[in-house]
Length: 69
Image (cartoon, rainbow, N blue to C red; front, side, top):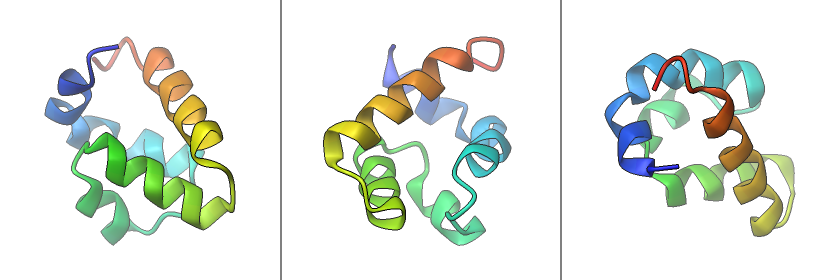
């Protein structure tokens, strides 16, 4: 998955991000701006999971969003 595409389409993906990771606030999702490292860090922090698990969840999410990307 080319993460540059995700960054470019972040506004379209924000709703889906909040559906999957409901503990993230609107402001946090706005601050991520499609930046994968920020995204991983916030998911890791909010959900108390390891970095590799947060990365796996985010990569799986990105793969499922093909119609928006």
